[in-house]
Image (cartoon, helix red, strand yellow):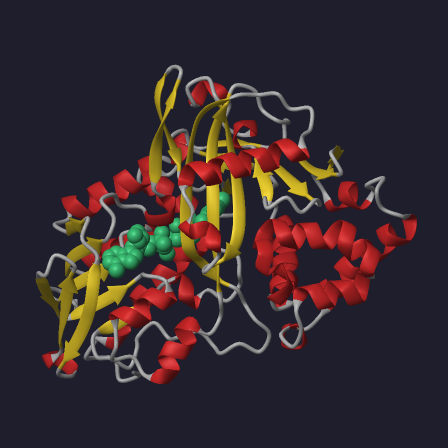
Length: 448
Ligand SMILES: Cc1cc2nc3c(=O)[nH]c(=O)nc-3n(C[C@H](O)[C@H](O)[C@H](O)COP(=O)(O)OP(=O)(O)OC[C@H]3O[C@@H](n4cnc5c(N)ncnc54)[C@H](O)[C@@H]3O)c2cc1C
């Protein structure tokens, strides 16, 4: 193997970093993973909440596995965890002016009593017309302008607007129409491939997956440095004589033949000053979507739905009733609910106190469910400034994995151009980057 014995440092131990590390260990490389936080897992990391029945481990950010997530499911099988996923379905709901309406399918949503007949017809037409729109044309306009044009103002306000907001929060208006066209196409393709609309969940969230990946890295000789962030990455020399020096926040340095950064675009540009101005622009030109997300164990759930879309602007993007998929017997008797506020990465909420935010998010949920009288058993707030870049109309192409800086590879959310982030996509991108790295260092490869 051309890469055998080459030293690799992976910056960030989320699922992307863990996957890149395992791929490199398979190729015989020596791997060190550096993670800024004390725990591994990144956005899939978990935390402990105190329930009346004792400590309960839950995802910091809610996660479900789709039946069509072939790469995730293959990984779970490989780790011996496939049998532990619970696949189930749960309804969705839309709350408007304190009234609850079923919203599990486009047909149900289009039949909402709040919608006029003309709006229902235009919703059907706008969905079909968006599906047929060539992506090149979609990339010249925003999702909001496309759907407003096709469905009209009233159907947009009462139907498409809340759906876009549920996914994209306060920045919903800026996003390219490619997002809506590719989302519709993916949904149709999943249906054509026979994938159902059930959601898969694991008791204890992603904790068993992340621990099993970590254990496998260590069993194959990989090492972890956790709780110390990388502050600088510097490359010297070219070709086989390349050395990359990684400086850590505790002042220590690691040297390697190759470094892979899995950090978000704005972080990566700060860590690697040698990237060209064009590469820096490719990593930062699209604004990132951030999220402030409350996680609650409640003594009673607000409803029986997994997703509740909200038309009222209360500062809450939606209500994620994880309890509808993972019953209270898995969560210490409490009902697990997430209250996300999707926003720009410089939103003032990021600097506010967690208790203040937890109160505000819960009060917003109560405003949507005026008759709700449940009690909070445990709660926490998690913040992620950089979740995924929003695809803007006519944006730059993503940065190639192998950069112009010798020995420096980037594979992160920054290269996501769909605006929808999931573990399936993160693992697939990590695999593509691993293949590109192997190709770039195979002396027999004349196709560089
Ligand atoms: C609210 C929410 C809901 C989601 N729901 C789902 C879902 O239902 N299904 C699904 O499949 N996916 C879901 N996802 C997406 C999923 O979490 C991501 O696809 C995946 O976790 C991305 O992994 P990553 O390794 O690329 O990035 P990250 O997890 O962000 O990993 C990057 C790592 O780099 C570390 N780091 C940053 N800076 C430094 C530094 N200077 N030095 C060292 N380390 C550093 C970070 O601490 C982090 O661990 C959701 C995400 C969010 C936020």
